[in-house]
Amino acid sequence: MFPFALALTTFTLLSCTSAHLAINDPAPLHYNELGGADFYSPPLKDDGSDYPCKGYHLTDWGAPVAQWPAGGAENRIDLLGVAAHNGGSCQASISYDAGRTFKVLKSFIGDCPRGAVENTLYTTEQTFDFPIPANAPRGSALFAWTWFTVTGFRQMYMNCAHVEIAGGGGEAGWPAGMPDMFIGEINQCKTQEFGSLYFPDPGSVVQFSGKPNWVNAGPIGVCNIPPDVPPNALMPGRKAKMVRMLKRGVEVVKGAFGRGV
Image 1 (cartoon, rainbow, N blue to C red):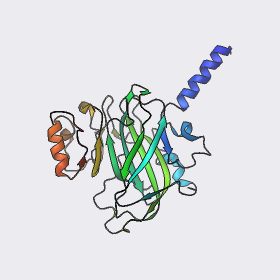
Image 2: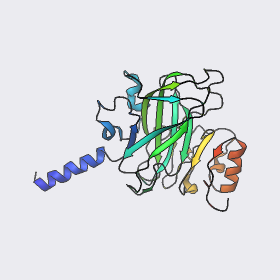
Image 3: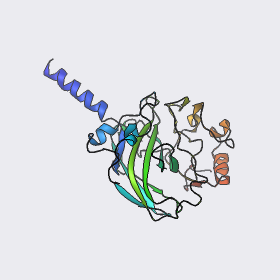
């Protein structure tokens, strides 16, 4: 193989393996042993065989890589990567049963990651804050970050990290009112390209950012959509959407829907 062709092939392979986003802090399960952010950037397999957590939830978690206080404190994750697929929507979720179920802590609808235009990130500020409920059980937990892109192949990205929840109010009332993490692409529930995914049940803490395209907002197919959210409610009508969310007790970030709302 000619040197130029070899170099081009090497560059292409590197681009494919490090093209997407991954959690940089806290470090995902076996992050250092398995190649860091480059290794963790690919999406889950289309058949769902490595859901959740790329299968690493079945291995030794090691020591917790972060300690997060319960009860209103803003905890955070940092993202690292290259190709951003025009951003998208993300969720921060937590599991206390070794990954069998995940409950949503916060949904980020639109502009996740921030400043994404095509496959370029125009800001290095990729820190995302979220609260841990006061009644969250203390002790070891499995944190999950999931991402659904605006453009590109319809795939689900997921990283998991072993964390410790400090303080908290025990298990009383947990996890009442907390929805399950959205699962798509690896099942019969699909997202639509060219729109920021509007999670059918985003939870009680939601951040709207950027300028989401609401035309292709809702998922399609066999999805776990709550009975109080009809499918057509996910499409037009920004003001009506805000009213519905406020009635459901969702915390909407000021200015999230733009002017005139």
